[in-house]
Length: 236
Image (cartoon, rainbow, N blue to C red):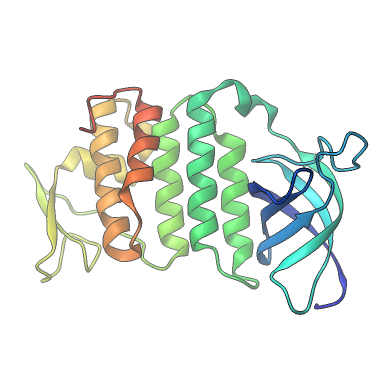
């Protein structure tokens, strides 16, 4: 659609300064990531003032440039601002993590529709209640969309060896880790578990699995877990 005006619903993933008054904004749309230049975004009389921010869903119209990956934003209107996230630091941390994962893993084309739907659902539910369980549910859904869905059924007492390459408790690969039945049950149904230690153990399992299959940097995820759990010593 080079050289045409494109209209789409979009979730704001990131905002970076371009000049004293302009922004470069990255969006996730049902067709994949789009980067736009918002000229004069911070001018006092700008049409764009207050029309977009992180976690917003907006309806955008942009001019698709044929020879650039940065397109010119022409119009922007709020569809969902999710203002309730602003007063909850755990929700903001969870929302930032969800945007990061979706931004890193979502493809271009029609397959991005499922990632867009997953991120929208995650942001709509991203409050401080059961935040850790919601993070695990998002992680598991993201792994499924990425094509590396793990299977945590079949864990035996007191623990079983989870084979990272196969993503299950049956396999022959040398990379494996012990998982207790309660952690496995948590990974199958995260919101049923209320014990923070079990939730954190389950989150660690997902972190190792991410790193093995998707080469994710563990540092950012670990900091988000600290904020959500509010247990600074748990992850040392």
